[in-house]
Length: 114
Length: 109
Image (cartoon, rainbow over all chains, first blue to last red; front, side, top):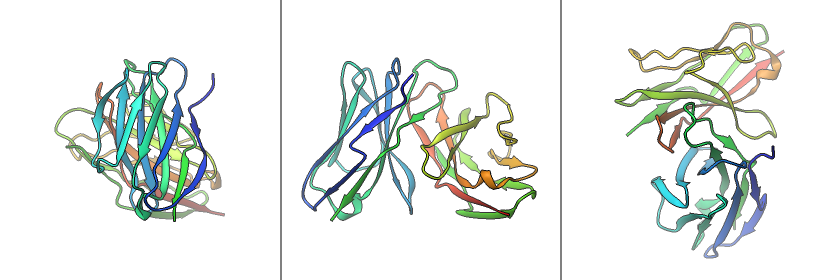
């Protein structure tokens, strides 16, 4: 079956703009998580959605938001972009109820803020 | 709150040498521990999980609850093992996984 798909793969924005990233999970997966990956900070948890509800949230400012649709697809939005938001944003899906809790990652959306 | 620490950002060994990537965690309950790997130009993927107690690509990891560690080991490193390795902790049945900062392993010929 198809893996986790993220769009767009690359994008360049300027400070102050806003951006929306999209994630399509593996078919049947209802949990979607978002992570920010940077060389200095590793993987930082942003939030996790399950059945259209945000269940967990990381320590990011309110400029970072997300949502999940009824088909489990998810979007995250970053408003008023700052230079420090430049990063690879990873989406991961998992099969809720599975004991092992494995995450399946997408290839990421690389955001550059100028 | 849970926390995962990988003390080495960079680790370099020669081909055929043993390798150990360290991972320590802090969590008061019973966690699920994972190792994920990211090869060059590939997506992050699961390498192994403590609950399976299996060996993948020659790697093993044992959960030591007394020392709160989950070190990844391989007796004979190969060049194709060069990658970024992340240790992760997940609270059972919770949606959040906490990752360490990662260790970049380089296996030299």
